[in-house]
Every structure is written in C-alpha cells, then in structure tokens.
Length: 423
Image (cartoon, rainbow, N blue to C red; front, side, top):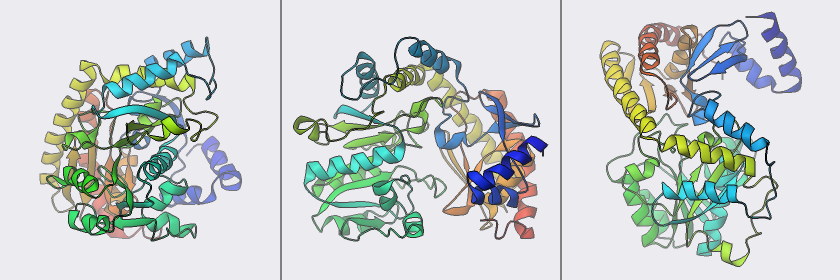
C-alpha cells in the first residue's frame, strides 16, 4: 500500500466517509484508482486490475472511451449545459436515438442526472397518469437512494434512515411470483409495477419463463403501468438493448442510466409511452431540474448510442457471452463444491457460492489476482460479475484464468471466518 494511498484514506476517514474506509480496511486494502483505460485501471502503486464490476455498468464502454471523450471535448467547444427551459437540437437527437432502439409504444424521453432521480420521476409520471398511488416492487430490488426510489426498493435502506415506506403507498412482493403480484393488484389502487429486470443487488437471480411478460399483462389487466428498471441491465448488457424486451415484455416506461453517461457525464432517462407521458401535454414544467437534458450530456448520450448500435459492438457482446458462458461452465465443474451456480444473461452475470460469505471472499481473492468485482449486497454468497461491452477476447480469457485461481483461495478465506464482521 503506497504512502499516498494511506494518506488519502486517512483524510477520507475524517472528511468523506469513515465507514467506507473501515470496510476497505476490513478487506486489508487501501485501493485508490490511478490511471485507467478500457477494461483496466491501476492503483497508485501501478498495480493493474481488470474491471469486472464496471461500477454497476457506468463503464459499459470501458474507462475513458476515447470517442465519448472526444465528443464531450468537441461539445465543450460549442456549448455548455444549456437551459432546461429551451428545446435544443442536441436534446432532440439524443431523444430520437433512444426512441429508435426502444419498443414502438415509446414516444417521449425525459432526461435526469442519475438512476434514482429517474425512478422517482417515473413513479410520479405513473401516479399522474393513473390517478393512483400504490407502487408494487420487489422485496430484493434496489432502485436508488433518492426518496421515492429508496422507498420502492428493499426496506434495508429505508429502515436505516427511519423512513419505512407507507404500506398504503408501497408494497413489496417476491421476485418471480406472479400470484403475489396479482393479489396486490386486485386492490385496484396500484399506479405502477416497478421491476428491476434482473435484480443486481440480489446477485442477478434469473427470471422464470414468462415472468416479465406476465408482469406486463397483470399490470395492464388491473389498470397499472409497468416500469422496467434497466439502469444496470439495459444498454445491450443482456445482448439486446433492453433486457425486459429480450424476455418478451413491453413496458410502459424504461428507466436507464449509468452507462448512458459513457462514464464521463452523469445522465439518466425515463423513456415513456404516450400514456406515461400524459403530463407533458398538461404542464411540461412540472418536472424540472437545472441540469435536466444538459446539452453536453445529450452530446455524450448520442455518441454512446452510436457506439451501442454498431454491428461490431453487438458482435463483441455475443463473443463475450459465449467466452464467459463456456469458460464459467468449465470452471464451475472444477469448483462445484464452492461455485454452485452461474447466473448469466449476456454479460450480466452472478457467481453464486455455497458459503454465505462466499461472494465477499471471492471479491477479496480476485483483488489479489488483479480483478475488481463486487459481492451482491443483499446476498453476500454471490459475486456480481460485469465486464464492459468492448472487452477484448484475450482479456476475457485472462479473467477466467485468474478466476480459476481465485476460487480456491476464496473457499479457504470464506471458511476461515476472517471476513466475519467486515460489514
């Protein structure tokens, strides 16, 4: 650990976030990111790490994607954030590119700065359109840390803040349980069914056959709108632009973020149907923010969408899906006593272990082998495994070789009890 990193951690504990510092110390590290490019970043000692977390998908196109950076620099030579009051050619172009890759029922786009903010907005739009209040969501979901998004997600975070959701406004149901969903919808007061297509913080458990189409049909049967939270699973990570569509569902709203930023300019969006966007005809100023649809951000979004829609990008995702699918199957067979399940949809992956702390142990072991990945906070037996879309084949194969080594180390670490009490 470098002296510079130690000084940064010492100061961070005083002025930034003492608990995060304590957690990393529990893992025995003082990680500070240094140089970064593509699928790799370095720490301040010059050690390289392959990024298999991608900050939840923020670095969907890798670190410091040059095309995105060039687009932002070029934009800075012409415009700034702009003004949320005025239309703009940059805003129109970004909206049109998102609508072009979305279901035909989508008509409008409303931009924001982060996923939680867009979730908040989508719920408000649904409440306006339906004149109802209740939101039904999953008991294992995470939708963000803002007000409505936090209350709609798992109660773990809202209880911490003493903001337990009002049961007249929010109901949580189990994932893959259409019967439980219908029982709530029968009350006739649900505005929106908000579903994280594959719940990331739960470790990416896969949907059962017909689940998402069933969500759509039940929501509409009982007069509710269906909001697909695609902040982590959208933007081609499933192999299709929107993961819910891959499973045959057509939502009324799609919420996207993280990778929409290109890793350089915070952007998120709600993509809306005519009904969901009905408020736009009544009062277009009802949802405002100083940086809504920033012109610089829209320039970045347009470039991101250009990259995502290229045949080469789609082909690379297909290649990575195959390489990881084949490689993980072989590795699981070798480590079947510890790695008990591989969950995969495209480059959305969860590695489920036999030990309740196995995901944490695997995270620690992978760090020692030059890979950065993060355990699932709601299921610490599981590791989130998320490469960028543009990762080269040789890097993916390197990841698999390092994972093979790390799994044996992780099993011993998990069974040692050294990580008990870290979080």
